[in-house]
Image (cartoon, rainbow, N blue to C red; front, side, top):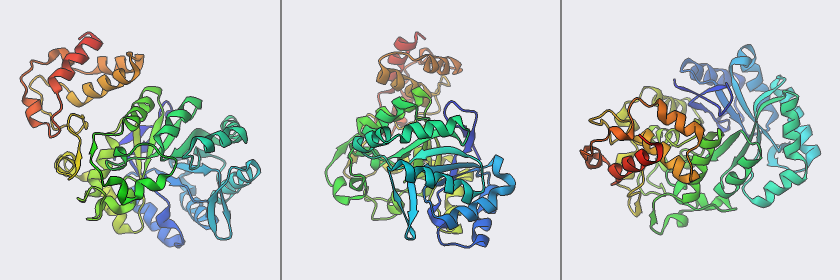
Length: 380
């Protein structure tokens, strides 16, 4: 299992984590079996969007003996009423729900306190005006949460909220959603009609979001990596199924992404996600599938897939390109990006323009031109 740091913190999470929907209405025995199996692979984190008290009590009981080693991403602004959950922006309800969550989990703190489901700028304004953001900041001061997070499906909102001290962004990341522009109505992501016209390359705001998070040290935790399972079937918006391993690897190669919360509903689902840990480079290779997708073209866009390797001069082309894109997006060279580039063993200036990488690229990226740009920007 690979582990990545949550942004600027020292907290490390496994690149594959649990979603909680597969644990709803299950027994304590089932919960323990799933946790034991996942932990045997090194899974150390879970997202708890649901405020279901029974779910929280079971999870709390199972992880009690290793609580300090297990990372919980709990949600602020959810409440439980009449046997179901809903989002709330009422501060009193938010406070009562959060305190109930801690009691049911039998813990004094959450590692990530995730402001729940903010998909419009209007909702974000409510979070500010109703004192919810201030409440989250007070929870951090009291050490009841370690990091302040927020969940969204909308890149327009996400780009705004990371300016306000949000340290972790839970965002929907997969190769189909990345084609769609931001919208207050996240249902558009799930609507087949949204994918009927031809798209060229990624939505620029989503690219900008991932790069901004990387630059600012905001960690991205991923939801909907499989598009609710649709991307794994013939009914995929892309009209071609991907595997769980391909979807997970796609998400993990986006800038700033640290973990994919896999929505497992059975041990078989869990095994398919955890297979990623032992999969080959060929099995992780989403590029070979994406390059064949009908009606969609990523031509000219670097997917950070690694098909350009091996380089005759041993340049890590994907990393150089990623750092180049961060600088272009910012219109400057951020110090952190400069230092990451400097730490590479080989640099753009080592390129001999042999063109072998361009012949291997399934997306016709102008790699030699990118190496020249990187050399100009970084100076070597």
